[in-house]
Each structure stands twice: as structure tokens, then as C-alpha cells.
Length: 549
Image 1 (cartoon, rainbow, N blue to C red):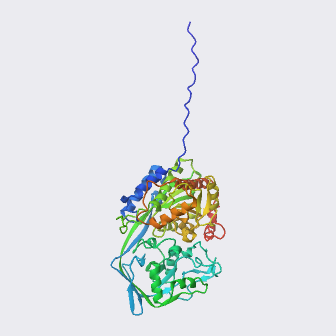
Image 2 (image 1 turned 90 degrees about the vertical axis):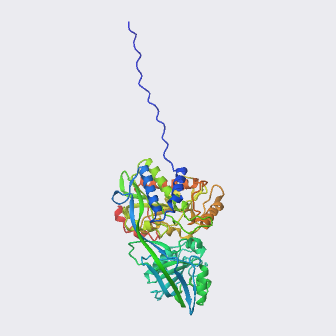
């Protein structure tokens, strides 16, 4: 008799271990910065071998992550035609008054450059006009120019807005932003206004508190500049900054006191005037080079609404190489500004690609030439690969604090858009609160690449650590303010903005994860964030509302 066989049991399936979701990783961030800020990348200036290395590295990283090319015609890049200008060091600068004259030293007394493609910059005793703050704002009932003719003259501006230093009982108080700089306070607006009025040149009188940075920053690239090669508006022939002491001297020679003029220019009845018998002369040969720079664009297509775009952005460029510092270093590596932001965009791409698909698309944009006037992002906004009308929001990373965990996140540009409400809601999930910038006079809302998108109507958020000190877990607000003071006072745009293996990137991870939450939230939403009432960008966005129906 054959024994009965035992019934065969089905095999037991092995348990699949839970897969941890991808997270923003501090070591990866540090690794990217270590490479991008190394001497081999030569300070990542546009149009240099440093750009070639940078662009190649960024494309390599996007390919390894597995996202798609996001540029025109299936390319990884968007070409940005540019010109680079450099004044010959043997040139001369002079101020004349009556029969006397004296030289100005670049960059000790003045920092000038040109963004025209002319082979020479020659100014022969051009009259100088003091234009106060140089603001023409009909909506605020303010006009500094009156009937003055700036044709062929040098316009001399005060920095910031007319009410920046005003007392509460002055008529100008609150007419602009009080301590919060408006676009009228930015040097870019002042150069643009001078050009619109036919000025030959424009100089802004430097003042550390009103500018938001010291003379070492304002004069960090003497004689050198970049511009878009296809710009429609004709810029002034000469532009730059003049040191406060040098300005005070030339004004005194013309019979005026700079401190008194600052007060007079805050009066609504102030009008620009020509400095008596005062001339400005410059004589330089100009090296002009035309070249193509590149924005690097990667795309994570949305599963359901691929034509609706969320944008995570930073700028890859820095200041290249300059004069040796006291240690002999010539490379200005831009480790925090903005290799760290660039690393953050790479990490966002990696984590979002590894996670559940989003219904909307995400464009990862790494801009060229931010340090030269937001040129890469401006070129994109003027010729967008994806329509701005259906770009949901822009999230920009540009300088992140490296001093550890924070109890808050700093909001730049309070009162602009509904994204601020989203920021507060999602920051709460990190047990953090939103703190408005405590250095609004620095005008940071108008100083980073998100501004190019805002001008095109796209709601924006900027994380920029120099907007004010965080409330740090270790050391509180005082430690956060000290970090800002140390960075801006010592290393901003300088050779010491270098990679540091001892950075505490826990707070950087917090901030990038917060942007991740915002992108995921909007990426699976049908909501279109709006500009708030009173924002100067609301009308632009409203004009394209039909595209979002």
C-alpha cells in the first residue's frame, strides 16, 4: 500500500521591504557645491570655459536623474545671445569744475562700465544733473525731473526711494514703501529711466544702508559688464556707481552739500537741476565680445495637465575671476550665491522624479547671467519656452543660510501673492512660521531671477537668506542676524564665498523641502495662485486669464 502524500502548500510570498521616499539630501547638496565652486569652474562667468564646464555638469546631472530636456526643440538649453564689455585699464576719468579738474580712480572712487557694443567710451566734459532719487511715478504723484533735459548729460542719482530715510512727519513718508524698497529704488530702474530720457550716462551715489550692501559689492566688477545682444531699448552709454565721498566732493565743488540734498530730494516739490560749471569726462577703449550663453532647462512632464508649468529655479553663474585678494585668490566661486541654490534645484528634480507622478509639469530652470542684471531669466521671460500665462508659479532659490535649523522661513516681498498663504500653511507642517523680511530696504524682491517672471505676471516665491536673519534653533534671531551680517559684510560676491565642508545644511534642507511641498501641493491641484490686490503685477496676470479657464 502506497502512503498518501501530504498536500503541497503554496509558497509564501516574501515580504517586500518598504521603500523609503527620496528625501532632500545634505551630502548631495554639499557635493554639488564642492564641484561647482571649485577653481576648475573658474567662477562660472558667462561666456567662459567655466560656463562650458558648468552647463555640461548640469546637463549630466539632469540626465542621470532621468528627467527630460526642457529647452526649445528637445534641447537641454535655451540660447541667450549676449555681449561682454570690458573697459581698457589705461583709460581715464576726470571731474572738471571751472578751470580745474581732478581724476577719479576706478574702483576706489567710482565703478563704471558700458553695456553698448561701441569700441570706445568717450565723454568730454558732459554736464552733470543731480536728479535726486530720479523717480517718475505718476501713480504716486511724484516727478523728480520736471522740465530738465538730460540729453547728452550725466544723471546723478540717490539710491533707494524718496521716503527711505524720511521721518514720519515728512510729506513723503509712506508715499513709496517707507523702509521697503520699491522698484523705483533699484539701480536698474534708475539706469532705465536715464536711458528713456536720453541721458549720456547715469551714476548712482553709493550709500551702504540705502543700497543694502557695501562699496566692495557695488564696485566688485569695475569696467566689466554683460548685456543681452538683442535688447530693443538703447541703454545709456555709461553707467555705474560713485562712492559717497567722491560724490560729496564733486557736489561741494559745485556749491552743494550732499547731506542737505538728500533731505531736499525727499520734498515732493524737488526738481532736478544741472550742477553749475561741472563736467564729467571719460576716455576708454572698450573690448566687446559677442557670444551665446545658455539657460539649462529640465522638464518633469505632468501626467494629466502637462501644459501647466510649475518652475523651480536658481542661477548657475557667478562673478568669474577678478583681482587677487590678500591670500592671492582670484576666483570668485559663488558657493552660496548661487551654487547652493543650483544644487537645491538638482535635488528637487531628483526627489520629484523619484516620487509619485504630479498632474502638472515641473520645469527646472538654471539661469545664466543673474549677476549681470537677471539677463538669463529676462531672456526666458521675453521668449518663454512654455507660455507664462499657463505657468502656475515660480519658486526661486538664491542664497540659503548655512547655520542650521530654523524656527521660521523668511518671506521676501510681503503682500504680493496668494503663494504667501500657501507658504505659511505648509511651513506649519514643519513646525515653522513665516517671518517677513527684516531688511526690506535691500529691495531683494527686485534683485533675483523670480522678478523676471513676476514682471511677466507669474506668481513667485523667493527664498533668499540675506533678506533677514532666521530664528535659528541654536542661537535664535541674534545668531541668524549675525550670519547675514557676516556673509554680506565679508563674502557676498567675494573670493571667500567658497564651499565649506563644515556648513550646517539642516536649514537648507528645510527650505528646499518646503519648496518641494509647495510644488507637490500645486502640482496635484487645479488652483491658480493669484496676485493680491495692490500688487503691481496683478494687472499683467489678469490680462491673460482666458488662458487659464
